[in-house]
Length: 154
Image (cartoon, rainbow, N blue to C red):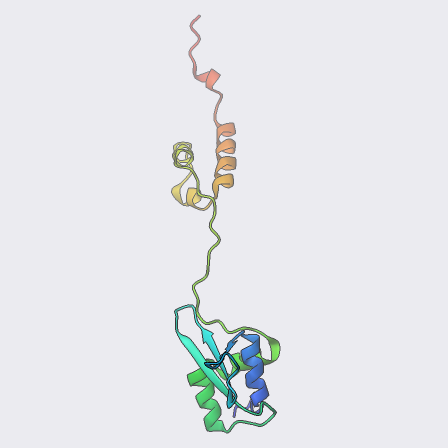
C-alpha cells in the first residue's frame, strides 16, 4: 500500500469514521443497513461524503486498488491523514472557514478621539474596545494640562 503505513483493514476504516464522527446511515425502516456498514459525513460546504465497509468488519485487508478508491473517492484524504485520524484521533482539516471570535468593536467617538490624539489608524484597528479605552486614558494622561494653556488675565 504505502511504505510508511501498514495495509489498512476494515477495522481501521471503521475507526477513521468513528474518530471523525461520520454518521451511520439507516435504511428505510430506520435500522442500520445490513449488507454494508454505511457512513456519511456532511462537509461545511454542503457536500456529503459516503463510505461503505463490507461486513464482517474485521482485520481483513483491502486490496491496493480498492483501498485507493476508498481513500481518494470516498474519504477524500491522503494516507498520512487517514492514519493520523484512525490511530491518533486527529480529525482531518476539511478546509472549513475559521470562525473568528467577534471582538467588541470600538465606538466611533473613541476612534475619532484616538486619531485626534495622534494614534495611527493601524494601531486603532488593532485594539478592541477595552484596549481603545485604555489607550485613550494613557494618551490623555500624556497631554499637557489644560490649565497651562489658558492665558492669565492678570
